[in-house]
Image (cartoon, rainbow, N blue to C red; front, side, top):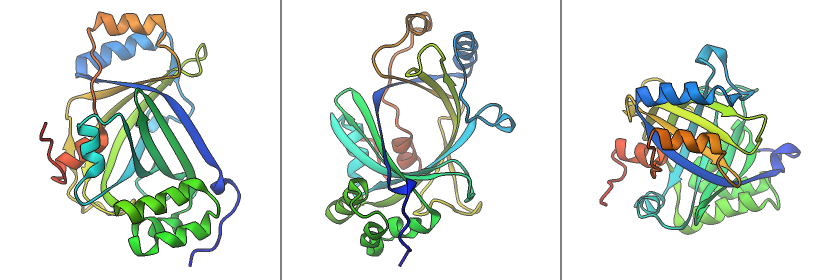
Length: 253
C-alpha cells in the first residue's frame, strides 16, 4: 500500500470561469498573436527552449462506451470528466502531477484538482486499487468522488493527449487569459508516462486552438479582434479529438 502523504497534496484547488474556444489557421494565429502581444505578456511558466510555450499532457478517463465523450458531443449542459495532468513527457520531481475533475455547468467551466505523487498513479489507473487511493487522501471529497465514479460508472484511463501551449496574461486584468494550443497528439494508453514506441496520432495539423478564459467579460480591445477576424466560437475538445483519432469513439452527430 502507498504510504499516506499529507500536506499540500490534500489541498483541493477550485477554479471557475468562462472558456471560449476558436480554431485558427496559421495566418490567423500569426496575426492575432501579434496584435495581442501589445496588450498581454507571456505568463511565468513558459520555457524559452519551447519558443515561450510549455508542454501539457493529460490522461483522460472514460467508460467503455465513451459516456463522457458523447455527453460532450451532444452538448449536455451539466457534465464532468476526470483526467490526470502533468507538464512533462517523463516524470520529473519538480514537475507537478494533478488529479483533476473538469466540467461544465451551463456556460461556465469549473475545475477542481489535487496534487498527487507518481506513486499514486497506479492507484488511479488500476480499477482494483482505487479504494487504496482514499487512504492517501482521507476525507478529501475529490478523492472520494473519483472512487465513487470509478465504482459506479466504471471509468478508466482511455486516451493520452499531448500539446504545446503558449499562454498570455494581462497585468491590467488578472482574470483574463489567452492560450494558443497546437501540435496535438494522442495515443490510446492507460498510463501517464509511456515510451516513444507508441503509435501517436496527430490531429488538427496546421491549426491552433485559441482558448479565451475570463471571469466576467472579455476586454473591449480583444472583442474588436474577434470582430475584425470574424471569429466564431466553436465546441472544440482535445479530449474528443483524441478519442476520435485513436478510434475510441465516433462522432455520429
